Length: 487
Image (cartoon, rainbow, N blue to C red; front, side, top):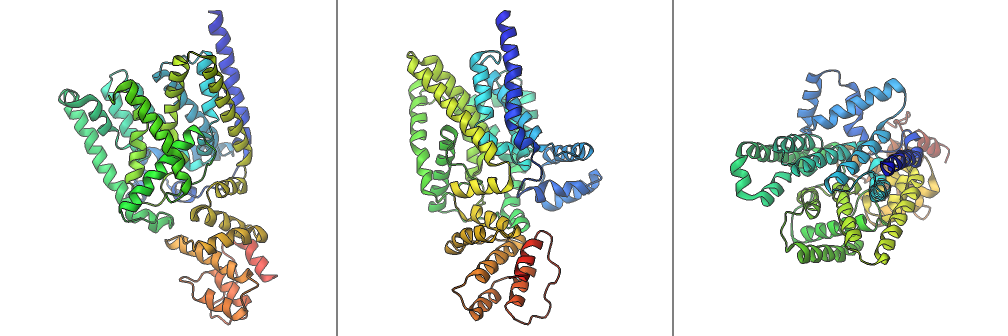
């Protein structure tokens, strides 16, 4: 009884400590989020179910649980005059951890339970996900599928189905869950629960087909950053390497990024971890796939692997696999006969703890978040995003350095909005290049596939007479327009 009171007090202190550490992120308002303009802000103007249904069906982006949550948080944030997304993200992730500890049968009111709670609350993958308002959909979906796993272990099939359905209506990442269920439980389970399992499979097919079409056709046109790729041997192999790297980040989160490029050589880093995990489970379980810890890797990453967009994998997609780490470390602790292993686990959590705090204080500004992502993976997506930020802020010297990478890699963002951003970046890079003569600059900028108010302003500055120069800068480009005017 005395021990329970002691750990109850320690649990309160732990939770308060986690919130205190996250305070810089919680208090930071208006941090850059590239998806917010597409999936959160449009909900501000939705006043009825009819209006929402029309917009959702028009976009084929059918995720009503996600949108209902976003609408509620937006309304509450407006009432309180404080953006609550990051605070709620933190609470959702803590709830996921508490459920995972219960599933893996670790007492929360124990030294091991509090160590896992504190350590994985500050794991850099969790920090990165919590820091994005739009990542709420991934956190919520992870919470609901973890609830499905919780009821799986209690053999309550109705609730398994319910939370599976809610999860994929929040974010379809875990859509392959019923396939895993059938693999594990086999024909007997299907005969016993054939109607509910059939509904699960039907939901998987319908939502999956809509989601595939959305990513293949609709999303690239809306945002310009979801360029689809053709499936071939090279793309499948490179995507598999990207999954290896994502697993590497779970164990050693030292190379985080907005997005992991499948072509990056660092993807090979995760391959040894795959071999170790497979060997461990083969030795212990002889590949009997009833062990839920190993399965936590399978269906979210399999969904990513089959998705037709070049936005391949990011930290928000690794939340459920991250919960696998609890089970693995628990087994290491239980089977360790030497104190050295326990010391190793303690050092590992200290490493995670320090790195998590460092990331919180590094990404509590827009520039910090984008800069950290670029430095750890300078792919086109990250370099274009950072260059666009420096352009809108008129931080010219910083823009020049990133612009060199953009130009060398010939980066392009497709789609209407993407082409406009691409034109703005390239036009400014050419304008600032002192080695190119004025006529060469005009010829190159005029030859860009799309002209924008900013490119017209630059052409006007270069003494070209154009029919309709834009005198009023578009929203967000006021600073760079002023810089060009005074150049």
